[in-house]
Image (cartoon, protein in one colour):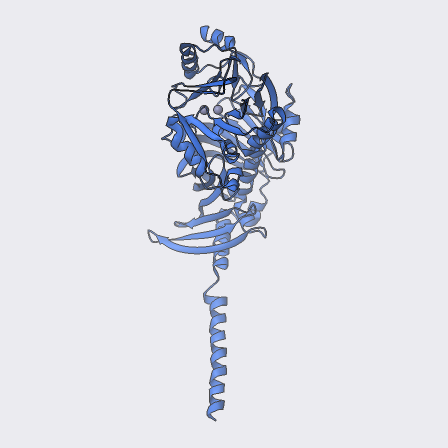
Length: 499
Ligand SMILES: [Zn+2]
Ligand SMILES: [Zn+2]
């Protein structure tokens, strides 16, 4: 009897426990995935419903933009070059997808088209096709546009990976983690007295920093024609505000201005180049021999130069990104052979001119920079690159840096390269790179005459500072080899400054 009785109780106990468990699972305690899904669904509902969001084919936003460039400050102690706020229009057609941006009063245009590539008007001076990295950036923004974010986050190609809730000032705050369609892990914040998304946090690969923490917050949600959309969007990178958008007008599913989306046909075949660069896994680099063993490597927006010595190669500037660096290295091997790349000299610390230096460090090159930049260059060379490991991350090499104060000469008796510190208002710790025998000077940003640019060269206050420093040093320059744009005779600069 006792045994039976025990057995009975045991069976009852198991049943009872499973009943309680299933009750908790099904009724009182949803899983974090279910909770996360619920708050995302509530957010979609608060914006006008998932079906309405799905039905958005295009969106036009007009207002103001303030853009601050990361890694472009004059001094290395600051992260940002603060831009001036200006009018900004964004027209996105999600059906292709494709986008038109119009900046400032002059409505300087950029067009990106997932099927045709893109182009931008560089400060109203010249047209340039968009590079693969820039097109990838557009694709990411189309995917995570706030009107499409919840459609994708709740779709079958994303997965909800976590949920937690807290209370801030007596209001519930929900944080849901979603592995998004492009593989990015988003931490989504909702709550603070409303159901809509207030913040997205994520980590993304970005040159030259590697794994970069980003945060985008949305506020000023307003109702318009059945939708409730944010009119303010603020992006932070490395904790700094890099972009602030304040819309004054948003319209949905309008007739699109087709002519704005056109990529013009120009003498430099911009339409063809835009198409060719779309999805390309390499960047074109055109080598030009400037003197025996000295080459300019010209790419879409950035250039560099390589110089052959008896036993090694010196590279002036490692711009843009690894895509460009790998192609430059391939061109170096074709033009001057297999000598080791011993030195990579940077002109200044700006992110566009240092975005490719890691690749050379991964080849074992010593990065030569002005003493002022040592810390920022070390940061670039040692930051984590786990999302998209590059050559340096995979090489396991210890990066080497050599600093220059006022002057340095690199010579092997047959070839000489001289470095000079040029103080200027563009960037602290600037080096000009001079080949005395060849009469060549490599510089970035002091004078940039873009491909296809017409009219007088654009002179900045620092263009004269650069010119004066070179003249004072007694360097006799024939040709200026630029980090952006085309080669220019020294006389062209001298004449332009005289006027
Ligand atoms: Zn610069
Ligand atoms: Zn530049």
